[in-house]
Image (cartoon, rainbow, N blue to C red):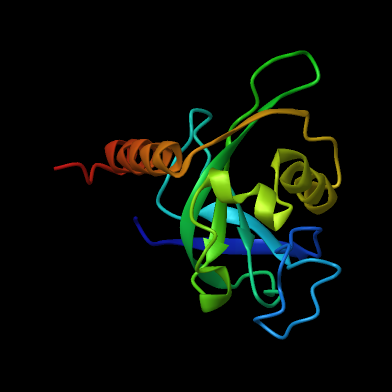
Length: 159
């Protein structure tokens, strides 16, 4: 599983929380904070850095860089039924999230696609379209690899 970093531009509270959260001792009835940002040195199909959401143990300030692990991919359609750019779903590198590994873990964390989309809409302050699917960690890793290669081709760093 590749470790990545996400440059955070905003953080919000979420409804993402573990069903059985007694072990951490944290009060998470409101859910874990989620940061929105981009993955440096990547380019998506639109030529922009990959968009990412990161579940974190503590809120991060804008401008912070958060080490994270990819979890999945949020697929959406826009207002005119056009595919919107995928959003990378991640978890911060923290022991609190040790059992949040792939999209099959999302229901146990109340983190299905609609929960991620709700946070994304709050952070962007606009409609983000309709969620069509949550892709797997393997799909997220493939997306990161392709986006990193696109960045390397553009900057001339490709070997």
